[in-house]
Image (cartoon, rainbow, N blue to C red):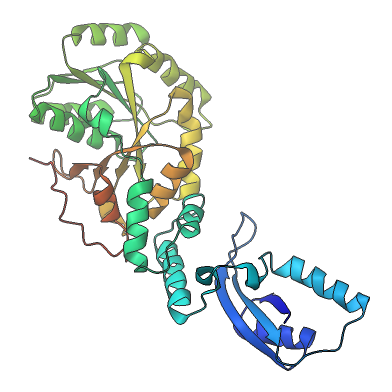
Amino acid sequence: MEYYTVVADSYENAVKKAKSLYGDDIRIHSRRDYMTHGTIFTRRQPRCEIVCYSSQRKEAKDARLRDRDMKEFEKEARTPDPSTLSPNERLDTEVYREKDAEAVSILDKNHIEDPLRSKLLKAFPTSEDAGVALSQMLLRSLDIDYGKQVHPKHFVAFIGPTGSGKTTTLAKVAYVYKQQGKNVAIITLDTYRVGAYEQVKAFADALSIPVKKASAEDELIAATESFQDMDIVFIDTMGTSPKDKELALHLTSLLSMLGSDRTDLIMTIPATMKEEDMREQYALYSRHGKPSLAITKLDETETVGNVLSFAYGAGLPIIFLTNGQRVPDDIEKASSKALIAHLKDIGLEMKNSESQISK
């Protein structure tokens, strides 16, 4: 018995195509629905692949028709002969199709894209509940910076675009470590934005944390020397633009004075930001080193799938989550379970499993 594989944009069209190629007496052996991978120029498209066979024995085909059939098979199928597949690979049930489609739907709802998307779908076990299976796979895929959470370096510099919540997140994190018994201080390099120093000074005064500002190298040296006995010195930086090369160079010069061996970098990324913009911002700030990510503005969106896709693709760990403007509240240390709780239809009710560290 000969098997033929046909691909079209729907099941109905796949059957029509198969009949036009191999006759009206074909029978469907199996079916697989999937989505193509889109590019920056094309959208993802639905596809249906059917494996069929003829119910009647045909006369031998001439060489030209056999050649046509083989080319059609190679072009469309890209799959092995069904007779060589294992029983699980040949499995064609409604359960299989529904769970595969459900997994794709969950990834779409959460804006999870490649390469994380491909990794999850490639290893997706269709025998399990889609939400639970994806949550378990994500738990194993996410990189949480537990090491820096517990053992931060002497300097912790916050970088990121203007409006991403650097200053408020810095104040919250500083208070977290102060509550753990650390001696902390703040130095702000942001003397460009109107009211920047006044904002961080107000937070520092409210939290009883000393603060200094530094706009030049000599001022930064003086500030760091005055805080040399502190356990952690948090550095607030100015937001930069790809067009403002002079400001970007100035920030690079100031951060280099701290010493990379003594400095942790934390990049604030709003959960509302498009992944494309995240990549652009990281390209701008990556000159300073490899940062950990603080995901901000979780209260303004229903999912963090876009940030997880970016973090996985860039190879960056996640360290803190913030979900509001209250200082020192609305912050928690990142964990796999806390991140899963901020995804739609993932199958695990974890929103209350991780306690916030606001007090």
